[in-house]
Length: 172
Image (cartoon, rainbow, N blue to C red; front, top):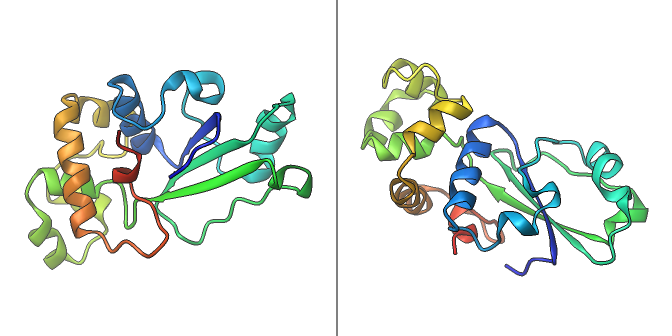
């Protein structure tokens, strides 16, 4: 994965933001916080809103927009004026980022048998009501080595389509 000089990391939800912040804070990604627009994770899913807020600042080079999301269908549409200045890289966490917790807990088989969504399984079966909150995920993966191990396990179990990226691809 080749990234431009400027990077924007857009996360779909709070849990994804927490995971990226943990990895950034421990220097575990292929880019550093200092290379990112405003040096923080962005929570803006619309290409149009992203363009209005961030791209009209007159950058001299290309920007890599790294989107962390669980949907393969969600589009990130930019206007013609900017589409040549931006590389959009989708990092897919399908079915949901909560799979990292299920794998960490060693409950993958139970999850598969349950037929539930990962977040529902975490709430109901693992009794983790705040599974989608930033604070919970930051505490749960306080040890970054545990997070990296969960990412590796997730990559092994996920159905990664050709040309797709996962969190593993962002690890340094």
